Amino acid sequence: MYLSISFSKLSFRDNFSVAADYSSYFNEDYEMLSESFENLSLELLNNYRNVEYRKVIVPSQDSDKLTFGVCYVPAQKNNKNLLILSSGVHGVEGFVGHAVQSLFIDRFLDEELIENTGVLLIHSINPYGLKHMRRVTNNNVDLNRNSPSTDNLYSTVNEGYPKVYELINPQKKVKVSSVENRFFFLKAVNEIRKVSMPVLRQAVLQGQYQYPKGLYFGGLSPEPQIDSLRPIIERICDPYQTILAIDLHTGYGERGVLLFFQDPVDKERMDKIESLFAGYTIDWGNTEDFYTVTGDFTDFVEALNSEKQFYPMTIEYGTLNSQTTMGSLKPIHIMILENQGQQFGYASERDSIKVKQDLLEMYFPASVNWRNHIMEQSKMVFDSIIPRFTSGNY
Ligand SMILES: [Zn+2]
View 1 (cartoon, rainbow, N blue to C red):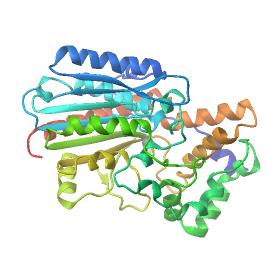
View 2: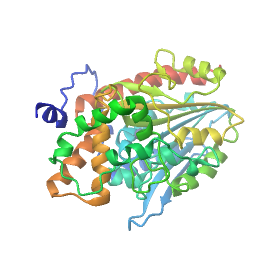
View 3: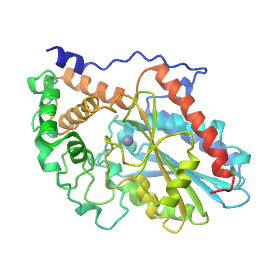
View 4: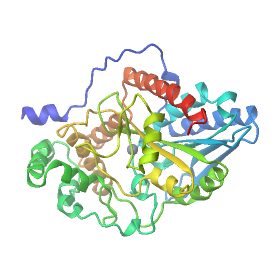
């Protein structure tokens, strides 16, 4: 009983030392976030030449007309470098993504930067997920498994998935206090014993294309926003030779720590990326708790820029200390319950609230101290990489 109780609580006493308050960058309302990004974009449009801002509509059965924002500030003198900063591929992670993008516009996007460097900001790519505080799109699609960089993405077979299907896709209403949920931890440990944690993690997280209602579904074709983005990205990237594409995520890893990770690229580019991000450790998929995914968004942007010097980077802001084997079970359990609730409903309103609260806390921690800390960390990252990227040595 002790195990199940200690496992079911989500509480942290953050004690990061922070020097400034960044609360004004954070907001929990989809409409306000898109309005805020629009205002920042219109300001850029007033200040610099040939700035483009557009709202891209994402059609859905949802009666809402949901949109995401694209703002492009071209290099004002020479089209040398392009910096792409994207957020909200996983809807609910866009709250932090918005804050970081706003910080970037506020403190780093200035005349000096854009002299030889263009900036492309893609804001909240999955507006349904942001609005409804979900990770997936309204088609139950994980956009970071849906972004094609090859022709055969949607026929990819995740061979381990059927083995974990029952564990991660219970076919009934969610009751948080049920025996199987209270003892999910033990059940999962039992599965880990059978196949090992790396195998289990890979099977669960890689993405799958056979079970439309299952967890980590990557879709059967590109989601509308991926199709809309393709020509925009192609056109904007076209004049630039060197592109750094940073995609912002939250959830995975040690609480308050920025995790830099990427599928490996060729040696020469890996060295360049290592030197761009000098001072930070990059996980190239070679540590024990890493996993690879199919349909990753940065791989999609890279495939549209195969002739360029393209430097992709995913930054993940850790929230739940999921870097350990046992720690990683909690986030998976939250994801399971949330998808189960969506597909089969909740036994009670309390169950629904509890699961949704946990999911929000996992991707957008309420702690002001955590938020201030990660903003300070982000500022330090931009402080170190931007001068290097714009120096012309890449
Ligand atoms: Zn994510």
